[in-house]
Length: 414
Image (tube, rainbow, N blue to C red; front, side, top):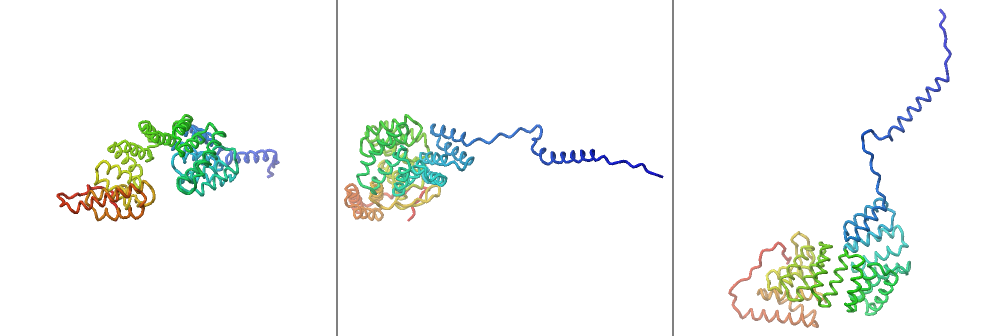
């Protein structure tokens, strides 16, 4: 009737408890970190520095869109890198994305407000957008922070010259720009910005032969920047070396096909030597690149008029002067008459085209507007008077045919 009692072995119980605890820990903590069998190991995240190196290579090869994308990936990997934002702004400026460049430079300044290069890139972006007062304030701040940085002096050259060319500054700006360009070149003799600035200062003072040498030096550093070939072509054109000018504009177009500027300059160059058919073709290409640009429409209309295509010339010039809708639906803003040589040319050419189409009720108000608004422009006055003469002759001639505009998809608004 008596049951044999066994004593509890507390050592075994303790060991079992510890073992169970270890098993629970391994299952909860260790096992989830072990990759499952037969599944490839994930690749490690790229370092921001690797993106930067690849972006610089792309920039040097003229692949600006790729360089911009790589700088943006570097920033996503390390959003606190102010230098990456600054490099991105520089690439965006050369790609013609000036608002984006301004935003990138300002992002860099939020991270480091004492970075002279970031202030310089912001000034450069503002200058390209026509904000010369803002650009001057920004570049002067850059010079205060680091007066020995060549790029700040190079950008200052462009701000000084553009302010003068816009009429916002005096002739003294050109002398100051020349000094700044020499200083930039002495501080950073191996950068495209320094040679570009020196070339721009020489170009602004009509020293085209020396400007050509500076732009060639910049191209020798990096031959894949469209803007440098545009500048070199401008100076060849000023020297009346038209074949080399066209070659440089074509190179610029190949490097940046979406930019209408090379096509615009080619059209103007061919017009200078009287090849208006070619001029019209390149003017049309420029419009295709930027359909909503009223000035490009005006240039296209001028080339069509000189090629004796008055009907299409009137359509394009009407879009430039009156505004309307582009083929892609974008709105074309009208160009008001201003003391600008090109705009005045669009107006008197439009008046002439309308007069030759016997649309004198539209042509005569434009001619009178020119006589009243730009009476000191001899070319404009002469063409306005010619418009009036054509319309007077039209009154004395019984028309035998009616001109009908060809059907187009872009129509000017009333």
